[in-house]
Amino acid sequence: MASLPMQRWFSDGVFRTIVRNASLLASGKLGGALLGLIALACAGRGLTPALFGTLVLIHSYANGVGAVVKFQTWQFIVRYGAPALERGDMKTLRDVTGFAVGLDLASGFVGLAGGLLLLPHAAQWFGIGPENLKLAMLYCTLIPTMAAATPTGILRVFDRFDQIALQQMVTPLVRSAGALLSYFGGFGFTGFVLTWYTADLAGDLCLWVLSIRELRRRKVRGALRPGLLGPARRLPRAWGFVWTTNIAHSIWAAWGPVSNLIVGALLSPAAAGLFKIAATFFDSASKPAELMSRSFYPEIMRLDPGSRHPWQLALRSAVISGAIAMVVLLIVTVGGKPVIDLVFGKKYVEAYDLLQLMTASLVVAMAAFPLESLLYMAGRERSALAAEGAAALGYAVVLVVLIHLFGIWGAGLAYVVGVCLKTLLMLLPTILAYRARHTLTHDMAAGAPA
Image (cartoon, rainbow, N blue to C red; front, side):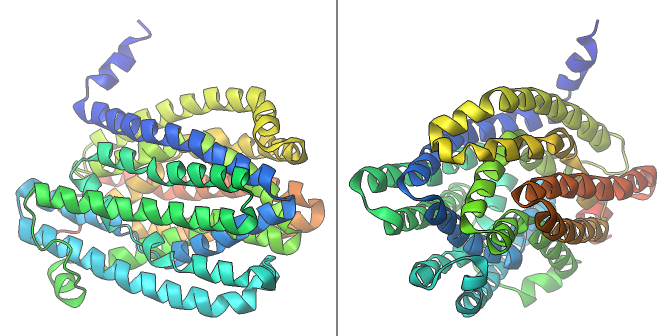
């Protein structure tokens, strides 16, 4: 009898689609995670802790700048493009994708210019020495491709999660191959930086190629012609949505890279390397929730927010994700230390104790993944923005304070506080939105004209 509720859950076609798409993404991420460990292992063993930390800082700087300027154009495409595709309105779909391309181009080049101008003044503070400044500036040329989310949105709105899963293998595959070459060929720090650079570029370009091919296959012409003012006039609330989601995600997407930079600045590059290893394992452990979220958001945007259906899907997805988190937590607790020792060597085993501290928030992080999507569905983007901003500000303050008090262990404790704070601040407006769901309509939530 206990299996009956679960059977009813999977009798829901939308729920099955969410799980299926998440499984497709998981297949790519699992292989990518294993390949990523190979790359990190080669870098960890082939470099001193200080140089490994510097590699992390260079990557984190470019990634952090990209995260700050990045518009969440994939969410915009899903939000506005999915209903248009359902109606067969190709003109609106082209407006949506063209607007997204324009935003990606503008934000990417602003990020590139800002990142290059800031780096010479900030590098020393972040722990990037003058001898590595040229390599760091080269890495900044990736910011435009890092900041582009249009191809991801195109593949998601066309339900091509299989293509996204394929693309997820490209960066770790190139990175692991290059890392092995750098390690056994003795190419040193420069070899590893160029490997990371090439891998990131290959993954980003692959995503564009797959999205262009999908548009051609569906005979959607002119979808990537950039435009801003014209499409925005024809898409109600477009600017409000993209600015709100941009600020919200810029704040929180920069969490990981900025955390690494703060740890490196307040402690040392070696400490940043330890924190990166622990954070990498934590991110890998929480990937199931991220994959569920990527599958969950496009599906609920096709549903009526005034009905109970999307809210029930959120609860079911949260239960599944939370249960997976419990299993993952057990695996990390038992196997984390031997894996770090085997992959990185004994000089990095200290990262396991940090990882154990951080995984205290794993169940919370994974079970809470539907909250943000529900707020966007309900037209509460500003509530999501307020929650993201308040949580990030609180995390930054706690991170600095606890690092001063407890060193590297303070960074791990601050991570737990940040995750729990974000969840709480997201949960409160989500409950209010659910209680007011009868006042919502699909048109309101989708931003379509009444």
